[in-house]
Every structure is written in C-alpha cells, then in structure tokens.
Amino acid sequence: MASSVKAIVFDFDGTLYDFSFIPIRLILREPYHLFRIRADRVVRRQLRGMDFGTTQAFEAEYNRRMSKMTHLTEEENFTWYQNTYIKKTMLKVLKRSYKIRDGLKEFIARLKDKGIEMVVLSDYPFVTERMLAVGMDQELVSFFSRIYSTQEFGCLKPAKRAFDEIAKAIAVPPENCLVVGDRADTDGEGARNSGMQFIQISDKNKKKESPAISWKEFTEWAEKEFDL
Image 1: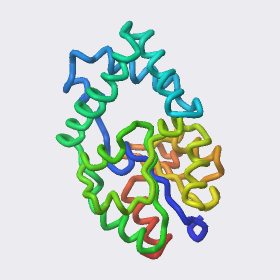
Image 2 (image 1 turned 90 degrees about the vertical axis):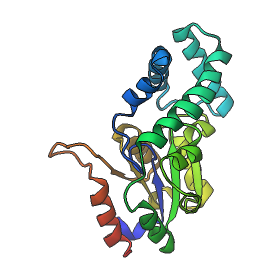
Image 3 (image 1 turned 120 degrees about the horizontal axis):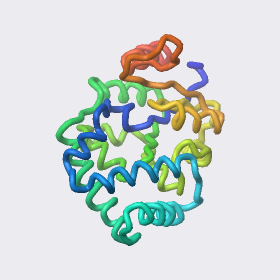
Image 4 (image 1 turned 180 degrees about the vertical axis):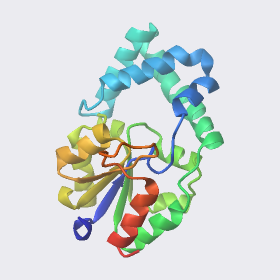
C-alpha cells in the first residue's frame, strides 16, 4: 500500500481528535435543546449516504425533515442549526473539552515535507472553525491543501461523489488516495465506493477480528510507510 499513497483524506471528528462523550456534552451544554439535538441526529442518520447534488438541495431536504420532527419552520430549524448548535454550542464544547492528538502538528508537518497531499473531509459544516476550536493553529490548518464538509457537495458520507470530487480537486487518482477515519460505514464505505484505500482509527477497545487500529498504531505505520 505504502508506495502508492500520494494523498491522505482525513476524517475530522474521532480521527484528528478523540471525540468521546461529545453527544452527552452537547446535550448538557444546551439541555433545553435536547429534542432538537436528537432530531438532528435522527435526520442525519436518515440522510446518510444520500447525494442531493448541491448544498442548497441538501439543506432544503434537511430543513424539511427537521421541521416534520420539531414542528418548527424550516427557517427556524436552520437558523438554530447554523447559529446556535454549530457556531455556539458545538464550538464551545470543543474548546472546553477536546484537543487535537498529541504530536499532531509535527506528524502532519512531516507528511507534508514528504510531499503527501492532505485533505480534511467532515460531514459537519464550519470545519475550519472546529479545527481551530480543538487547538489547531493557523499554520497546522494551512498544512491541509483542502478542507471540506460533505454538505458543500450536497451529500453526506459515504456518498461516492464527495470522494471523487476530492480526488479530482487534488489531481490524485483515487487508487493513490488513503482515507483515514473512525467509521467503516461512512469513511470506509465512501473510500471503497470510490476506489480509495482505507484505514480505520479506533480509540475504543476493539474485538480481535476488527481491522481498526489506534491513532498511535497509525502514526507508527505512517512513519515506516513514508520514511518520516
């Protein structure tokens, strides 16, 4: 695998930082929004893997489904999601309780020095803001040539087109791209659908038959793989 990898597509949540307990922390931060937070998670599960073609079409369907659950207007739901849930609640929780992987900046810098193209792909919006919230500085953010939310493409993982568009944008064939993420059913399936390689990261105790490895094991593999 090693010599063929020219680009790495990193998932964000659960990959570049350990996001354990984030659902309960989000709820505790805004308990009076419990029902909306739950509705958001339900709707996003329903939309998993769907491709609506554009950001606007995705947002329209998200808002329509949220309204059916919350009985609020589509505008009220979207304003809450963008301005309250993501920009306020989530960013505050990330700043207070989470931080990037130990040694992440040095590790990413060494990959960059080796000429490895690096991209971040998250299902949630405001990716750069969330990267800064968990302790990345502007220099580390700049090491990634592209930073995307799948919503920009009008879809959610594991929709194939998001991965295809990334390969096209960085001019690296899919077979030379490695996706690194914590979920086999989203990051992994999206990688396989587009012909990319995949490594699953897990911070939890894993079963013997699981192919997932720890972040430490991944960095050790990468150091040998790319002669860092």
